[in-house]
Image (cartoon, rainbow, N blue to C red):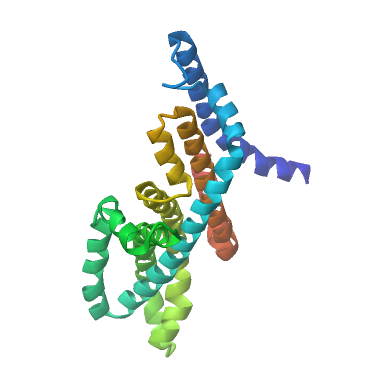
Length: 269
């Protein structure tokens, strides 16, 4: 039993060593550069000063981080509902695809930072404009990944289902949708990150709360320590959101995750 646990943990510890060692090396280089060159804290604070300031401001960061998290989650949920619905409709009907796809691409390529002030004018400084921008950034990768998954079916499977008198709806529900889940979660992982970015963009343009608001205040006051603290908090928040998506994926399509991890271990070995 202990041998099996050791065999399972050893590759993970070994894989985690590389990014951990890289981060430690960057922090040491950063600390040495600041110390040797005597860089003042208001230009580039050292890692120790940054960590100390992060701990001191953690309460403030947490209160504004909850606002950003709320906007991100709502925007991501709306993006999932919209993207999956559109993907299903586009795969189901060629006419819908020809009508909707150019619009999806058009809205996705529109510069959000230029349009964001309009949402502030229309919807005020509350949650709504940030949720809309978060949704706007997140829907496209989820939609494209879901469409790819729904279409990426071996023709033999479709022919076999039809030979067994399966209807188009049955093929869609029992074959296409389960087959699309790995691609959907790949898009959802990317969508979760850009949804957070969308919330920050909305707060940066105009808000009175949130991590984007703190970034604006830090820039206005030339508070580099606060800016670094917000960046660290955003990094942690983004990683947590990504981890939650991975956790949902592991429970929703455990068969695919297990196979993928085994293939990765074989490839690395």
